[in-house]
Amino acid sequence: MLSTPQPIPDYAWFKSSYSGGNATECVEAAFVSTGVRIRDSKQRRGPCLAVSAKAWKSFVAYSLR
Image 1 (cartoon, rainbow, N blue to C red):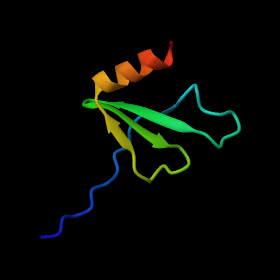
Image 2 (cartoon, one colour):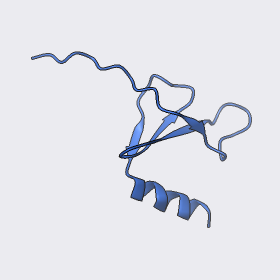
Image 3 (cartoon, rainbow, N blue to C red):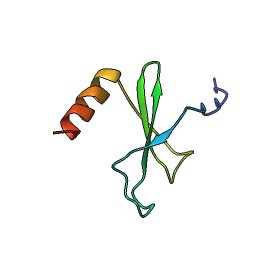
């Protein structure tokens, strides 16, 4: 049984403040009901990483140290 490809959701993506200014190191994130999606801004139709809200909070807290 083949499944029908699903459209990619149009989340409200935002660019990380830690992304490089020369447009070669851009990471974007989007808040969703189950947590956060993370992607490479140069590969917008490519894969994205899904993390829980708890994991995102831990990541941000560690990044701010």
